[in-house]
Image 1 (cartoon, rainbow, N blue to C red):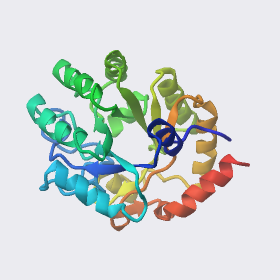
Image 2: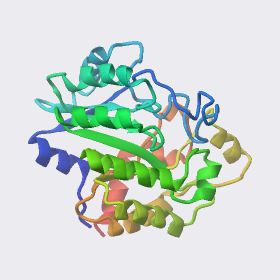
Image 3: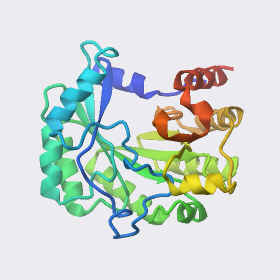
Image 4: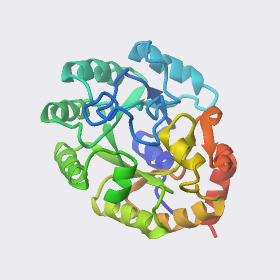
Length: 291
């Protein structure tokens, strides 16, 4: 089963191998600072889903250099995407955003900027900045949607309704940035059809890319407590493969699939433990898609 992978898209766009460097700008989130909630999303780790990001005490330029060293064995003569991953990366005064993003986008080895954020954190001043930066180098905005189902959104404490996502996508389309949407597969209480409905909705939004992320139960989260109490079960590998196959079938050829699984920090992974062997999981996914 053919699909447009991120690796192939980046090679065709930039003409070389491109690797993402995960950065930590030291921001927080409205779901943590009390604006919406103080507990964060129920699945989110202490690192704000940026567990593989560089040290926030370093400057952006220092983080990029550290990241380049980290992946030096995997990439030769390639380029990099500066990926602001940890927490909500448009949740700061616009002058602070400008300082952090400009340091990244002006680095000689950076070919694009990627910003992970929430759909409810895209004010007009932020949009104007993203549009300006997109005129320098390509900008990707990654939106954490996870699900279109309000019951699930309430359970995971997402903190915004679906219409907020719709408005964010419309606003981002107007400024011409590349839109990538995160979807979690295996959220408690959701059926396979629920998950496919979310994927269809995202595809019908006509965004540029989608990330399919297996639900991980991470140590220290409220999700871990519910898992320990037996309130839900995580997916088995065969269940996940079955869902992923059907997801890929309905994703149009021109939407880039940025991720088909994902991995958490092994030291903090509670379940599903089979997901810790990322290489085996990717091999199983590729085999399933080629059957």
